[in-house]
Amino acid sequence: MLQLELYNAIWLFVIIFMLHDFEEIIAVEKWAKRTESMIRNDDKWINNRIWNFWNVNSHSFAKRDVFIFLTMSIITFVKVQYLESTWSSMLFLSFLVFVLLHNLAHVLQTLLLKTYTPGLYTAIFLVTPYTIYLIYRLKSASLI
Image 1 (cartoon, rainbow, N blue to C red):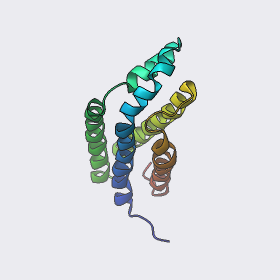
Image 2: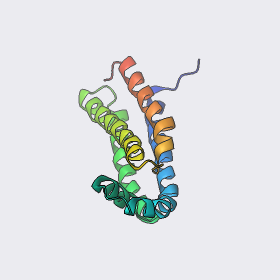
Image 3: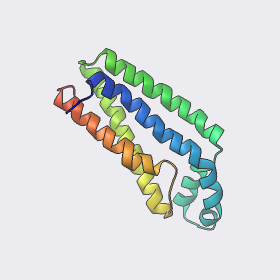
């Protein structure tokens, strides 16, 4: 069975996560327009907070994602450069756990609103499995 080199597996995480960000960017405007009346008529504070977060245009959302991409790239670069150091492992593992929590937030938002939220599909079917795979690979290599 062909296995990715660990360095490549770590760098591939950036691409996997960006596919998730692309789903969000592509879906955010249409989603906000489609769900506005449903959520605005709802008096639940949390539902309105969720809608306000997603009620942006794609351009504004993409600007947020540039910051995420840069942060993720720096953390990934540091991990690859200092692959065996404890501090880089803790930094990278913290980021991976943050991503898993981020993905859980997508699921919780969807359950609370009872409708799809942008990024849900890639969070469930792409980012979460790959993040778990990457944690497993790092643990197998005794790097976390």
